[in-house]
Length: 154
Image (cartoon, rainbow, N blue to C red):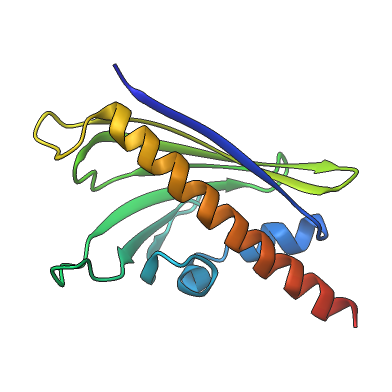
């Protein structure tokens, strides 16, 4: 049984600003509260970015990090990503979609994954954790992007 999450938030800001800010991986430590570092390792000819993310140290001082590949599709306002170094996941695929609505830009994240048998949590527990954390991160991003939009409008 695999895990699946599907979360979205509407951001009251121009599409280009939402796209630019949320796809600037190197700025993710200031956009997300969970990341301590983000580093682009390689930019491939098709536009795919290979990058490393690191969380803030956990309660034992351990820094968890991994490498992912992310391919933005500006024409269709979506991004496909997958973990290259999977860690506790057997696989992790992420799809980001940006849709213009009357209220702003709906940013949607769909995550499909499966935990390794040796992982400390199963697919159901990770689904619960991801849904909880995704909501926190999306609302934080919403507030930061909306603040940037208001500042740019002045």
